[in-house]
Length: 287
Picture 1 (cartoon, helix red, strand yellow):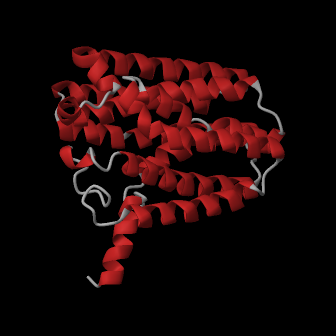
Picture 2 (cartoon, rainbow, N blue to C red):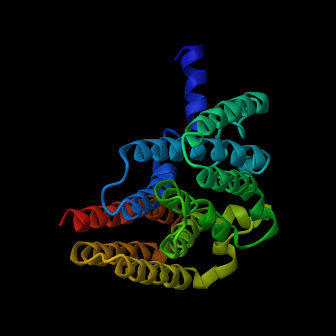
């Protein structure tokens, strides 16, 4: 591999573009919100802007996260070869890339209304501060839940120039989902996190981890059902929730051994839950 190609690949890895699960888990709830806010016919321009924004902001967030953890990641089996942890990329290069992604995100958000621009500033603050939460609290997954849900009120404000109660109910549901899947993610790192002092819900919940994961999955599905009922969503949406519940139950069952690889795979497979629910929303409006 040439030097240029090798360097480019390191940038791709730094932005996690080689691992789409991060932006997929961020994209699904944003798409739920766009379809509900648009009553099944969202503005195509907004869909394009939000998908592009999800990818660029997720990439920027990964850079901030890896910069904050550059001295911790070498001690964690799964992250020790990340570009900043392995010194394959300098911190200066990382910040230049972060600024470029920020400019792209700014160009996207400036096409939206004033309320959505204001909400985007809150999104930026949450994204930049999230990586430091694992140092001060055992509940960084809740903070991540806000970060991964903030596209929901933005989607409603972009469509309606207001943020109705439905948006906040949907945000609450997605926050519960994020806590569930990110606890599974943290379970795969727990042995290393305990050694270096990283805090997480997986560490906090300890042997009751899967009980709480199940509890938050149940809260997520119950809140989604309530939100969908408020918006008049019917059979297809309810079928999607039933399928999502089945997938969640299967993932929890698979993780009963707490095997690190299995827990990480369960985290990745949460994308199926988001996709199934999105399909249910789309089909319900089409019907």
